[in-house]
Amino acid sequence: MADLSPAGSGLRTAQLDGRRLSEALLPLELAPRAQLQLAAISRWNAMRGVRVGLVAAALLLMLIGANLATPIYPLIQQRLGLTALDTSILFTIYVFALVPVLAVVGHWSDLLGRRALILPAVLLAAAGDAVFATAGSFWQLALGRAVQGIAVGLSTGAAGAALGDLLPDHPTLAAKLTLACSAGGVALGPVVGALLAGGSDPLLTPFLVHAVALVALCIPLAVVHPRMPGRSRPPASPPRITTPAHLRPRRLALPLTGRREFLLAATAGFISYAVFGVYLSLAPSFAAKLLHTDSHLTGAVVAALLLGSSATAQLLVPPTSDRLVIALGMTGLAAGLGLVVAAEYTGTPALLFIGSVLGGACQGVAFRSLFTSAVAAMNPERRGSELSSLWVIVYLGSSLPIVLVGALVQHYGLLPAVSGFATIAAALCAALAVAVARKPRTA
Image (cartoon, rainbow, N blue to C red; front, side, top):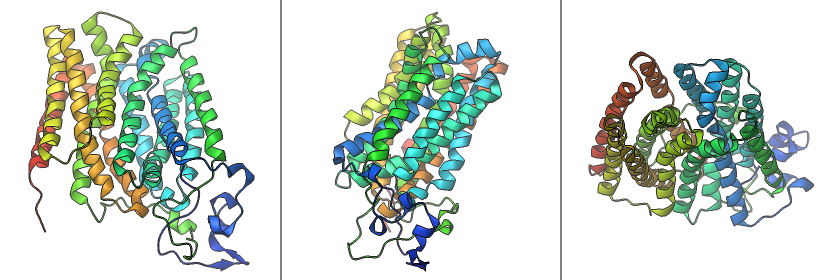
């Protein structure tokens, strides 16, 4: 997979006690490759396919873990006496921890290398599992969610950038894997959680099994030989120097190139993740009421339908630059939401399943195309930073909307709250469809 080596253009070479500045200020494993003999542990020169698989597995596993608890929340509510609003707040604590981390360290992987963030993130996600599994109060649950959010924040931009580094000749495939692992992890999380919760200890087993899988993944991540991020530099060029000053937080900014593509992708992601977040937090209750069942697996499958359809579409449907197709995709997401709400009003379960699949597949086609265009326009040497900025906007969509809908559920009931949210989300989808369909102005 990608490396531990610093990268970043225009950084001067300095000397300190006979060593380069980056060697003096950073641990040896983070110093420039050209200046040290790599530790024996990092000498597995894995093929590119293996490296791609490791990055994808890390991203997929961490997002599965962040959503393991979705079907288990009813049990947690009963055991700890939590309300629907408490559950919604737990969803948003994850995002409120994730977003600041993305904003602060999003550029670090461009300087230190991708693995320097991905490997600690995987270990931290395992620690989050342990905290969540042993939680006995709302505040312990909140701590576990915060740790999971920090882990995903550390790795999201780095993993996407690593895939871009490893597949420079296949940018479409890199974007496809990034989004499919993201959506697929969120979709698989509830199903895996429901399946593992069927044992003797439904609150411990899912997180214990997941933590073991994460720790096992750390072994190949640690032994793989590093590679440079971004574009390859000429062999004669001096090593790039990284100092603590370069790691200071930077203001989030729009990329210098491809701003329209960036804004369209970020807006589509914001709306989509608002829908995903509300759907994941409320779909189990919605399905239980409509289908007259208390099965955790049934609720998890319904919750996974929307995101699973999105991930499948992202993997199978080729990206398109056709503005009309993308606009129709966002319109299809709005139509799917309408069918889901209509299912409850009419008592027709089929509409719930059709609306979930339609909305997810259409969202997958639209967002994947917009995301691919945005990533293709990014500067390879700033890809980690710019991807992190995009994901900050996207993840904000799954924060406040969930809290607001959770509060509405407590005051007005489940169906009125979901109906109101679906109406607003559908209107935003329609507005974005119009913006995408408009021909961009030429300079």
